[in-house]
Image (cartoon, rainbow over all chains, first blue to last red; front, side):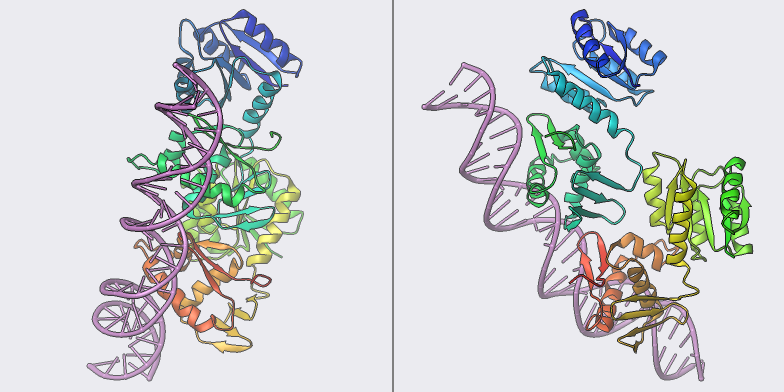
Length: 224
Length: 224
DNA sequence: ACCTTTCTTCACACTTTCTTAACACCCTTA
DNA sequence: TAAGGGTGTTAAGAAAGTGTGAAGAAAGGT
Protein backbone atom coordinates (compact mmCIF):
# COMPACT_ATOMS: atom_id res chain seq x y z
CA UNK A 1 0.00 0.00 0.00
CA UNK A 2 1.31 3.43 -0.96
CA UNK A 3 1.63 6.24 1.55
CA UNK A 4 0.62 9.73 0.42
CA UNK A 5 1.31 13.03 2.20
CA UNK A 6 -1.03 15.97 1.60
CA UNK A 7 0.40 19.44 2.29
CA UNK A 8 -2.36 22.04 2.00
CA UNK A 9 -3.61 24.76 4.32
CA UNK A 10 -7.28 24.38 3.43
CA UNK A 11 -8.92 21.74 5.55
CA UNK A 12 -11.64 21.29 2.96
CA UNK A 13 -9.12 20.44 0.27
CA UNK A 14 -7.32 18.01 2.54
CA UNK A 15 -10.58 16.26 3.30
CA UNK A 16 -11.45 15.96 -0.38
CA UNK A 17 -8.06 14.57 -1.31
CA UNK A 18 -8.11 12.15 1.60
CA UNK A 19 -11.43 10.73 0.45
CA UNK A 20 -10.34 10.32 -3.15
CA UNK A 21 -7.00 8.75 -2.30
CA UNK A 22 -8.26 6.48 0.48
CA UNK A 23 -10.78 5.03 -1.94
CA UNK A 24 -7.78 4.06 -4.04
CA UNK A 25 -6.10 2.38 -1.13
CA UNK A 26 -3.59 5.06 -0.21
CA UNK A 27 -2.55 5.52 3.41
CA UNK A 28 -2.91 9.27 4.07
CA UNK A 29 -0.89 11.75 6.11
CA UNK A 30 -1.74 15.42 6.29
CA UNK A 31 0.05 18.68 7.04
CA UNK A 32 -1.39 22.19 7.15
CA UNK A 33 1.76 24.16 6.38
CA UNK A 34 5.26 23.83 5.01
CA UNK A 35 7.33 23.14 8.13
CA UNK A 36 4.85 20.55 9.32
CA UNK A 37 4.85 19.02 5.86
CA UNK A 38 8.62 18.58 5.85
CA UNK A 39 8.46 17.09 9.31
CA UNK A 40 5.82 14.57 8.26
CA UNK A 41 7.73 13.74 5.10
CA UNK A 42 10.84 12.97 7.08
CA UNK A 43 8.99 10.91 9.63
CA UNK A 44 6.58 8.85 7.52
CA UNK A 45 8.60 8.61 4.29
CA UNK A 46 5.57 8.81 1.99
CA UNK A 47 5.65 7.31 -1.51
CA UNK A 48 4.17 10.44 -3.03
CA UNK A 49 3.50 14.02 -1.89
CA UNK A 50 0.67 16.33 -2.96
CA UNK A 51 1.87 19.87 -2.40
CA UNK A 52 -0.20 23.03 -2.56
CA UNK A 53 1.71 26.00 -3.92
CA UNK A 54 -0.20 28.64 -1.98
CA UNK A 55 0.87 27.94 1.57
CA UNK A 56 0.79 30.58 4.31
CA UNK A 57 4.01 30.44 6.32
CA UNK A 58 6.41 28.97 3.79
CA UNK A 59 5.88 29.02 0.02
CA UNK A 60 5.32 25.74 -1.73
CA UNK A 61 8.46 26.31 -3.77
CA UNK A 62 10.47 26.70 -0.61
CA UNK A 63 9.05 23.47 0.79
CA UNK A 64 9.93 21.69 -2.42
CA UNK A 65 13.50 22.97 -2.40
CA UNK A 66 14.05 21.90 1.20
CA UNK A 67 12.50 18.52 0.47
CA UNK A 68 14.71 17.91 -2.56
CA UNK A 69 17.81 18.38 -0.46
CA UNK A 70 17.34 14.93 0.96
CA UNK A 71 14.48 13.18 -0.83
CA UNK A 72 13.55 12.08 -4.34
CA UNK A 73 9.96 11.31 -3.50
CA UNK A 74 7.56 12.10 -6.37
CA UNK A 75 5.79 15.41 -5.83
CA UNK A 76 2.51 16.44 -7.43
CA UNK A 77 1.84 20.17 -7.34
CA UNK A 78 -1.64 21.51 -6.63
CA UNK A 79 -1.99 24.99 -8.09
CA UNK A 80 -4.64 27.48 -9.03
CA UNK A 81 -5.03 28.92 -12.48
CA UNK A 82 -2.78 31.62 -13.85
CA UNK A 83 0.27 30.66 -11.91
CA UNK A 84 2.30 29.58 -14.91
CA UNK A 85 5.47 31.20 -13.64
CA UNK A 86 5.22 29.45 -10.32
CA UNK A 87 4.34 26.17 -11.98
CA UNK A 88 7.39 26.36 -14.21
CA UNK A 89 9.58 27.19 -11.23
CA UNK A 90 8.15 24.27 -9.28
CA UNK A 91 8.78 21.84 -12.13
CA UNK A 92 12.32 23.08 -12.47
CA UNK A 93 12.87 22.68 -8.74
CA UNK A 94 12.10 19.00 -9.08
CA UNK A 95 8.33 18.70 -8.95
CA UNK A 96 7.07 15.84 -11.09
CA UNK A 97 3.78 17.19 -12.37
CA UNK A 98 0.93 19.47 -11.42
CA UNK A 99 -2.84 19.61 -11.48
CA UNK A 100 -4.81 22.82 -11.59
CA UNK A 101 -7.57 23.43 -9.06
CA UNK A 102 -10.32 22.62 -9.48
CA UNK A 103 -9.40 19.20 -10.84
CA UNK A 104 -11.20 16.00 -11.64
CA UNK A 105 -10.43 12.95 -9.54
CA UNK A 106 -9.73 10.83 -12.59
CA UNK A 107 -7.07 13.23 -13.79
CA UNK A 108 -5.53 13.45 -10.35
CA UNK A 109 -5.28 9.70 -9.95
CA UNK A 110 -3.90 9.26 -13.45
CA UNK A 111 -1.10 11.74 -12.81
CA UNK A 112 -0.32 10.14 -9.47
CA UNK A 113 0.03 6.78 -11.15
CA UNK A 114 2.33 8.17 -13.81
CA UNK A 115 4.73 9.95 -11.51
CA UNK A 116 4.98 6.99 -9.17
CA UNK A 117 5.57 4.52 -11.95
CA UNK A 118 8.33 6.44 -13.65
CA UNK A 119 10.59 6.58 -10.63
CA UNK A 120 11.18 2.87 -10.64
CA UNK A 121 11.30 1.69 -14.20
CA UNK A 122 14.54 3.15 -15.45
CA UNK A 123 17.06 0.38 -15.11
CA UNK A 124 17.76 -0.57 -18.70
CA UNK A 125 19.80 1.18 -21.32
CA UNK A 126 16.53 1.36 -23.19
CA UNK A 127 13.34 3.31 -22.72
CA UNK A 128 9.96 2.08 -23.87
CA UNK A 129 6.97 4.37 -24.19
CA UNK A 130 4.03 2.69 -25.81
CA UNK A 131 5.07 1.71 -29.32
CA UNK A 132 8.23 3.75 -29.17
CA UNK A 133 11.47 2.15 -28.08
CA UNK A 134 14.78 3.94 -27.54
CA UNK A 135 18.01 1.99 -27.41
CA UNK A 136 20.38 4.34 -25.61
CA UNK A 137 23.37 2.13 -26.14
CA UNK A 138 23.10 1.92 -29.90
CA UNK A 139 21.38 5.26 -30.42
CA UNK A 140 18.54 3.54 -32.22
CA UNK A 141 14.86 4.38 -32.11
CA UNK A 142 12.11 2.07 -33.26
CA UNK A 143 8.38 2.33 -33.64
CA UNK A 144 6.35 -0.87 -33.70
CA UNK A 145 9.62 -2.80 -33.97
CA UNK A 146 10.45 -0.83 -37.10
CA UNK A 147 13.52 1.32 -36.98
CA UNK A 148 13.14 5.09 -37.24
CA UNK A 149 16.06 7.22 -38.31
CA UNK A 150 16.64 10.12 -35.94
CA UNK A 151 19.37 12.74 -36.04
CA UNK A 152 21.55 13.14 -32.93
CA UNK A 153 19.64 16.18 -31.74
CA UNK A 154 16.30 14.54 -32.36
CA UNK A 155 17.42 11.50 -30.43
CA UNK A 156 18.60 13.57 -27.48
CA UNK A 157 15.31 15.43 -27.46
CA UNK A 158 13.03 12.42 -27.58
CA UNK A 159 15.20 10.80 -24.94
CA UNK A 160 14.58 13.66 -22.52
CA UNK A 161 10.86 13.51 -23.19
CA UNK A 162 10.74 9.73 -22.93
CA UNK A 163 12.65 9.65 -19.67
CA UNK A 164 9.88 11.76 -18.21
CA UNK A 165 7.07 10.18 -20.19
CA UNK A 166 3.68 11.26 -18.97
CA UNK A 167 5.17 14.17 -17.05
CA UNK A 168 5.82 17.71 -18.11
CA UNK A 169 9.31 18.85 -18.98
CA UNK A 170 9.77 22.62 -19.10
CA UNK A 171 11.37 24.26 -22.11
CA UNK A 172 14.28 25.31 -19.93
CA UNK A 173 14.89 21.78 -18.77
CA UNK A 174 14.76 20.46 -22.31
CA UNK A 175 17.16 23.08 -23.62
CA UNK A 176 19.59 22.50 -20.78
CA UNK A 177 19.60 18.74 -21.33
CA UNK A 178 19.73 18.71 -25.11
CA UNK A 179 22.21 21.56 -25.57
CA UNK A 180 24.40 21.33 -22.46
CA UNK A 181 26.74 24.20 -21.81
CA UNK A 182 24.97 26.39 -24.31
CA UNK A 183 24.34 30.03 -23.51
CA UNK A 184 22.26 31.26 -26.44
CA UNK A 185 18.53 30.87 -26.32
CA UNK A 186 17.82 27.62 -28.15
CA UNK A 187 14.07 27.62 -27.61
CA UNK A 188 13.51 28.84 -31.17
CA UNK A 189 15.07 25.76 -32.68
CA UNK A 190 13.36 23.56 -30.16
CA UNK A 191 10.03 24.08 -31.93
CA UNK A 192 11.58 22.99 -35.22
CA UNK A 193 12.98 19.80 -33.77
CA UNK A 194 9.71 19.04 -32.03
CA UNK A 195 8.09 19.45 -35.42
CA UNK A 196 10.49 16.99 -37.05
CA UNK A 197 9.99 14.47 -34.28
CA UNK A 198 6.23 14.65 -34.60
CA UNK A 199 6.53 13.93 -38.30
CA UNK A 200 8.73 10.93 -37.68
CA UNK A 201 7.07 9.30 -34.70
CA UNK A 202 3.83 11.15 -34.22
CA UNK A 203 1.87 9.20 -36.77
CA UNK A 204 1.65 5.93 -34.90
CA UNK A 205 3.68 6.55 -31.78
CA UNK A 206 3.13 8.49 -28.58
CA UNK A 207 2.07 12.09 -29.06
CA UNK A 208 4.23 15.03 -28.06
CA UNK A 209 1.80 17.30 -26.25
CA UNK A 210 2.46 20.99 -25.74
CA UNK A 211 1.56 22.65 -22.44
CA UNK A 212 1.34 26.28 -23.46
CA UNK A 213 3.73 28.54 -21.64
CA UNK A 214 5.35 25.68 -19.77
CA UNK A 215 6.82 22.92 -21.86
CA UNK A 216 6.13 19.54 -23.47
CA UNK A 217 4.87 16.17 -22.37
CA UNK A 218 5.29 12.82 -24.09
CA UNK A 219 2.04 10.93 -23.92
CA UNK A 220 2.54 7.78 -21.91
CA UNK A 221 0.61 4.57 -21.88
CA UNK A 222 -2.76 4.76 -20.24
CA UNK A 223 -3.50 8.37 -21.07
CA UNK A 224 -5.24 9.50 -24.09
CA UNK B 1 34.32 -27.47 -18.19
CA UNK B 2 34.13 -23.68 -18.19
CA UNK B 3 36.06 -21.56 -15.74
CA UNK B 4 34.31 -18.56 -14.20
CA UNK B 5 35.88 -15.72 -12.21
CA UNK B 6 33.73 -13.82 -9.71
CA UNK B 7 34.89 -10.30 -8.79
CA UNK B 8 32.74 -8.93 -5.98
CA UNK B 9 33.55 -7.46 -2.61
CA UNK B 10 30.60 -9.00 -0.79
CA UNK B 11 31.40 -12.48 0.44
CA UNK B 12 27.72 -13.31 0.56
CA UNK B 13 27.28 -12.53 -3.11
CA UNK B 14 30.36 -14.54 -4.04
CA UNK B 15 29.03 -17.53 -2.11
CA UNK B 16 25.65 -17.31 -3.81
CA UNK B 17 27.19 -17.08 -7.27
CA UNK B 18 29.57 -19.93 -6.55
CA UNK B 19 26.70 -22.20 -5.55
CA UNK B 20 24.64 -21.36 -8.62
CA UNK B 21 27.52 -21.71 -11.05
CA UNK B 22 29.04 -24.84 -9.52
CA UNK B 23 25.70 -26.57 -9.88
CA UNK B 24 26.04 -25.86 -13.58
CA UNK B 25 29.47 -27.39 -13.70
CA UNK B 26 31.56 -24.22 -13.72
CA UNK B 27 34.96 -24.20 -12.09
CA UNK B 28 34.97 -21.12 -9.85
CA UNK B 29 37.61 -18.53 -8.97
CA UNK B 30 36.96 -15.59 -6.69
CA UNK B 31 38.42 -12.14 -6.07
CA UNK B 32 37.32 -9.55 -3.52
CA UNK B 33 38.56 -6.42 -5.29
CA UNK B 34 39.72 -5.10 -8.64
CA UNK B 35 43.48 -5.63 -8.51
CA UNK B 36 43.05 -9.16 -7.21
CA UNK B 37 40.50 -9.78 -9.93
CA UNK B 38 42.87 -8.74 -12.70
CA UNK B 39 45.55 -10.93 -11.19
CA UNK B 40 43.27 -13.94 -11.09
CA UNK B 41 42.05 -13.27 -14.60
CA UNK B 42 45.60 -13.23 -15.91
CA UNK B 43 46.59 -16.36 -14.02
CA UNK B 44 43.60 -18.64 -14.50
CA UNK B 45 42.37 -17.37 -17.88
CA UNK B 46 38.67 -17.85 -17.07
CA UNK B 47 36.12 -18.40 -19.82
CA UNK B 48 33.78 -15.84 -18.34
CA UNK B 49 34.00 -13.10 -15.70
CA UNK B 50 31.23 -11.86 -13.41
CA UNK B 51 32.15 -8.33 -12.39
CA UNK B 52 30.49 -6.21 -9.72
CA UNK B 53 30.41 -2.52 -10.60
CA UNK B 54 30.52 -1.28 -7.02
CA UNK B 55 33.96 -2.33 -5.94
CA UNK B 56 35.83 -0.60 -3.12
CA UNK B 57 39.42 0.03 -4.16
CA UNK B 58 39.10 0.20 -7.96
CA UNK B 59 35.86 0.89 -9.81
CA UNK B 60 34.37 -1.89 -11.89
CA UNK B 61 34.74 0.27 -14.98
CA UNK B 62 38.43 0.65 -14.31
CA UNK B 63 38.84 -3.10 -13.90
CA UNK B 64 37.02 -3.66 -17.17
CA UNK B 65 39.18 -1.16 -19.04
CA UNK B 66 42.40 -2.71 -17.79
CA UNK B 67 41.13 -6.17 -18.58
CA UNK B 68 40.14 -5.23 -22.11
CA UNK B 69 43.66 -4.11 -22.84
CA UNK B 70 44.74 -7.68 -23.17
CA UNK B 71 41.70 -9.95 -22.98
CA UNK B 72 38.50 -10.59 -24.88
CA UNK B 73 36.98 -12.79 -22.21
CA UNK B 74 33.20 -12.37 -21.92
CA UNK B 75 32.27 -10.12 -18.99
CA UNK B 76 28.89 -10.08 -17.28
CA UNK B 77 28.26 -6.98 -15.19
CA UNK B 78 26.54 -7.22 -11.82
CA UNK B 79 24.99 -3.90 -10.96
CA UNK B 80 22.44 -2.45 -8.61
CA UNK B 81 19.46 -0.41 -9.67
CA UNK B 82 19.70 3.17 -10.80
CA UNK B 83 23.19 2.96 -12.20
CA UNK B 84 22.07 3.46 -15.78
CA UNK B 85 24.94 5.73 -16.74
CA UNK B 86 27.51 3.38 -15.34
CA UNK B 87 25.90 0.43 -17.03
CA UNK B 88 25.96 2.14 -20.40
CA UNK B 89 29.56 3.12 -19.84
CA UNK B 90 30.42 -0.45 -18.92
CA UNK B 91 28.81 -1.81 -22.05
CA UNK B 92 30.67 0.73 -24.12
CA UNK B 93 33.91 -0.31 -22.46
CA UNK B 94 33.40 -3.82 -23.72
CA UNK B 95 31.18 -5.55 -21.19
CA UNK B 96 28.94 -8.12 -22.83
CA UNK B 97 25.78 -7.88 -20.78
CA UNK B 98 24.60 -7.11 -17.29
CA UNK B 99 22.17 -8.33 -14.66
CA UNK B 100 20.63 -6.13 -12.03
CA UNK B 101 20.78 -7.15 -8.39
CA UNK B 102 18.80 -8.82 -7.09
CA UNK B 103 18.57 -11.31 -9.94
CA UNK B 104 17.08 -14.74 -10.43
CA UNK B 105 19.41 -17.66 -11.02
CA UNK B 106 17.61 -18.61 -14.20
CA UNK B 107 18.16 -15.16 -15.65
CA UNK B 108 21.80 -15.17 -14.65
CA UNK B 109 22.51 -18.53 -16.24
CA UNK B 110 20.65 -17.61 -19.40
CA UNK B 111 22.71 -14.48 -19.88
CA UNK B 112 25.91 -16.35 -19.17
CA UNK B 113 25.09 -18.88 -21.85
CA UNK B 114 24.31 -16.17 -24.37
CA UNK B 115 27.46 -14.13 -23.88
CA UNK B 116 29.65 -17.20 -23.89
CA UNK B 117 28.18 -18.41 -27.12
CA UNK B 118 28.60 -14.98 -28.66
CA UNK B 119 32.20 -14.55 -27.66
CA UNK B 120 33.35 -18.07 -27.05
CA UNK B 121 34.63 -18.30 -30.52
CA UNK B 122 37.32 -20.80 -29.86
CA UNK B 123 35.20 -23.70 -30.98
CA UNK B 124 33.77 -21.71 -33.86
CA UNK B 125 36.24 -18.94 -34.39
CA UNK B 126 34.55 -17.22 -37.27
CA UNK B 127 31.96 -14.58 -37.89
CA UNK B 128 29.77 -14.74 -40.97
CA UNK B 129 27.82 -11.77 -42.26
CA UNK B 130 26.24 -12.44 -45.61
CA UNK B 131 28.99 -13.21 -48.08
CA UNK B 132 31.67 -12.00 -45.72
CA UNK B 133 33.46 -14.46 -43.48
CA UNK B 134 36.01 -13.55 -40.80
CA UNK B 135 38.39 -16.18 -39.51
CA UNK B 136 39.33 -14.85 -36.07
CA UNK B 137 41.87 -17.58 -35.49
CA UNK B 138 44.00 -16.86 -38.53
CA UNK B 139 42.96 -13.23 -38.92
CA UNK B 140 41.76 -13.87 -42.42
CA UNK B 141 38.79 -12.49 -44.24
CA UNK B 142 37.05 -13.94 -47.26
CA UNK B 143 34.31 -12.82 -49.58
CA UNK B 144 32.39 -15.46 -51.54
CA UNK B 145 34.99 -18.01 -50.46
CA UNK B 146 37.65 -15.81 -52.00
CA UNK B 147 40.26 -14.46 -49.66
CA UNK B 148 40.52 -10.72 -49.10
CA UNK B 149 43.70 -9.21 -47.79
CA UNK B 150 43.09 -6.90 -44.84
CA UNK B 151 45.59 -5.01 -42.74
CA UNK B 152 45.52 -5.60 -38.95
CA UNK B 153 43.63 -2.36 -38.30
CA UNK B 154 41.17 -3.08 -41.04
CA UNK B 155 40.57 -6.53 -39.64
CA UNK B 156 40.01 -5.22 -36.13
CA UNK B 157 37.60 -2.66 -37.50
CA UNK B 158 35.52 -5.01 -39.60
CA UNK B 159 35.50 -7.44 -36.68
CA UNK B 160 33.92 -4.83 -34.42
CA UNK B 161 31.32 -4.03 -37.04
CA UNK B 162 30.65 -7.68 -37.81
CA UNK B 163 30.21 -8.62 -34.17
CA UNK B 164 27.37 -6.14 -34.03
CA UNK B 165 26.16 -6.67 -37.57
CA UNK B 166 22.90 -4.95 -38.29
CA UNK B 167 23.24 -2.60 -35.33
CA UNK B 168 24.79 0.79 -34.97
CA UNK B 169 28.20 0.98 -33.36
CA UNK B 170 29.05 4.47 -32.17
CA UNK B 171 32.31 6.07 -33.21
CA UNK B 172 33.38 6.10 -29.58
CA UNK B 173 32.81 2.39 -29.27
CA UNK B 174 34.71 1.67 -32.46
CA UNK B 175 37.66 3.82 -31.51
CA UNK B 176 37.88 2.33 -28.06
CA UNK B 177 37.76 -1.23 -29.37
CA UNK B 178 40.09 -0.80 -32.33
CA UNK B 179 42.63 1.46 -30.64
CA UNK B 180 42.45 0.38 -26.98
CA UNK B 181 44.19 2.56 -24.45
CA UNK B 182 44.58 5.38 -26.94
CA UNK B 183 44.08 8.97 -25.85
CA UNK B 184 44.32 10.96 -29.07
CA UNK B 185 41.25 11.46 -31.18
CA UNK B 186 41.38 8.68 -33.72
CA UNK B 187 38.12 9.49 -35.45
CA UNK B 188 40.00 11.18 -38.29
CA UNK B 189 41.75 7.99 -39.29
CA UNK B 190 38.62 5.99 -38.76
CA UNK B 191 37.08 7.52 -41.87
CA UNK B 192 40.09 6.51 -43.93
CA UNK B 193 40.00 2.91 -42.78
CA UNK B 194 36.27 2.74 -43.39
CA UNK B 195 37.02 3.97 -46.88
CA UNK B 196 39.59 1.25 -47.45
CA UNK B 197 37.28 -1.45 -46.13
CA UNK B 198 34.51 -0.33 -48.43
CA UNK B 199 36.81 -0.61 -51.39
CA UNK B 200 37.87 -4.10 -50.42
CA UNK B 201 34.60 -5.66 -49.37
CA UNK B 202 31.96 -3.17 -50.30
CA UNK B 203 31.61 -4.21 -53.90
CA UNK B 204 30.00 -7.59 -53.36
CA UNK B 205 29.88 -7.89 -49.57
CA UNK B 206 27.79 -6.31 -46.85
CA UNK B 207 27.62 -2.53 -46.96
CA UNK B 208 29.11 -0.32 -44.26
CA UNK B 209 26.42 2.23 -43.62
CA UNK B 210 27.10 5.56 -41.96
CA UNK B 211 24.67 7.01 -39.43
CA UNK B 212 25.61 10.68 -39.48
CA UNK B 213 26.70 12.04 -36.15
CA UNK B 214 26.50 8.64 -34.49
CA UNK B 215 28.54 5.86 -35.99
CA UNK B 216 28.52 2.99 -38.48
CA UNK B 217 26.48 -0.12 -39.10
CA UNK B 218 27.37 -3.23 -41.06
CA UNK B 219 24.45 -4.29 -43.18
CA UNK B 220 23.33 -7.72 -42.09
CA UNK B 221 21.43 -10.39 -43.91
CA UNK B 222 17.80 -9.68 -44.45
CA UNK B 223 18.08 -5.96 -44.86
CA UNK B 224 18.49 -4.15 -48.04
C1' DA C 1 70.43 0.25 -44.16
C1' DC C 2 66.91 -0.67 -47.56
C1' DC C 3 62.48 -1.80 -49.17
C1' DT C 4 57.72 -2.85 -48.28
C1' DT C 5 53.62 -2.46 -45.91
C1' DT C 6 50.71 -0.05 -43.02
C1' DC C 7 49.19 3.93 -40.56
C1' DT C 8 48.29 8.72 -39.95
C1' DT C 9 47.60 13.37 -41.48
C1' DC C 10 45.94 16.78 -44.53
C1' DA C 11 43.13 19.02 -48.08
C1' DC C 12 38.97 19.54 -50.40
C1' DA C 13 34.41 18.06 -52.28
C1' DC C 14 30.24 16.52 -50.82
C1' DT C 15 26.24 15.26 -47.76
C1' DT C 16 23.53 15.64 -43.73
C1' DT C 17 22.07 18.18 -39.97
C1' DC C 18 21.36 22.47 -37.39
C1' DT C 19 20.03 27.11 -36.90
C1' DT C 20 17.77 31.16 -38.21
C1' DA C 21 14.08 33.67 -40.01
C1' DA C 22 9.59 34.47 -41.73
C1' DC C 23 4.95 33.69 -41.65
C1' DA C 24 0.57 31.10 -40.63
C1' DC C 25 -2.23 29.36 -37.05
C1' DC C 26 -4.41 28.77 -32.99
C1' DC C 27 -6.36 30.33 -28.32
C1' DT C 28 -7.33 33.77 -25.07
C1' DT C 29 -8.70 38.35 -23.87
C1' DA C 30 -10.54 42.86 -24.55
C1' DT D 1 -13.72 41.49 -34.30
C1' DA D 2 -9.10 42.65 -33.41
C1' DA D 3 -4.77 42.14 -30.87
C1' DG D 4 -1.17 39.59 -28.69
C1' DG D 5 1.36 35.63 -26.81
C1' DG D 6 2.71 31.37 -27.74
C1' DT D 7 3.13 27.59 -31.01
C1' DG D 8 3.29 25.03 -35.76
C1' DT D 9 5.26 24.98 -40.32
C1' DT D 10 8.24 25.77 -44.04
C1' DA D 11 12.36 27.14 -46.46
C1' DA D 12 17.22 28.52 -46.96
C1' DG D 13 21.78 29.60 -45.46
C1' DA D 14 25.25 28.08 -41.95
C1' DA D 15 27.58 24.57 -39.63
C1' DA D 16 28.98 20.04 -38.79
C1' DG D 17 30.02 15.64 -40.31
C1' DT D 18 31.62 12.38 -43.99
C1' DG D 19 33.97 10.51 -48.48
C1' DT D 20 38.09 10.42 -51.02
C1' DG D 21 42.74 10.82 -52.80
C1' DA D 22 47.47 11.45 -51.96
C1' DA D 23 51.67 12.09 -49.42
C1' DG D 24 54.58 11.82 -45.47
C1' DA D 25 55.51 9.08 -41.13
C1' DA D 26 55.92 4.90 -38.73
C1' DA D 27 56.44 0.01 -38.41
C1' DG D 28 58.10 -4.36 -39.91
C1' DG D 29 60.83 -7.59 -42.65
C1' DT D 30 65.06 -8.80 -45.32
